[in-house]
Image 1 (spheres, rainbow, N blue to C red):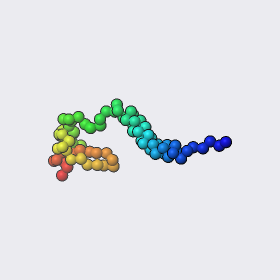
Image 2: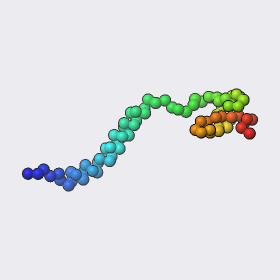
Image 3: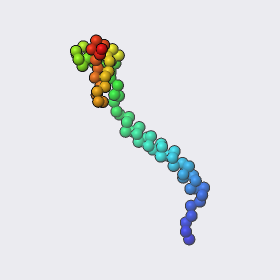
Image 4: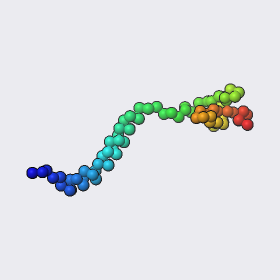
Length: 79
């Protein structure tokens, strides 16, 4: 005799599979990322001008992107 899976059981498996897989993936990512340090610079961090070396906070510097690298210039050198 061939074993037959009932349609109700098959429907329940495919109904719950996306939810269970989503929770497992979310849990795995959370476990992998929970001990990583933040990549945001500390409050009060200063940056130096690439041209003249003057130091200032990031809000007072003008960023310029050069092929993926970011250079910060003061307001005097950015002109």
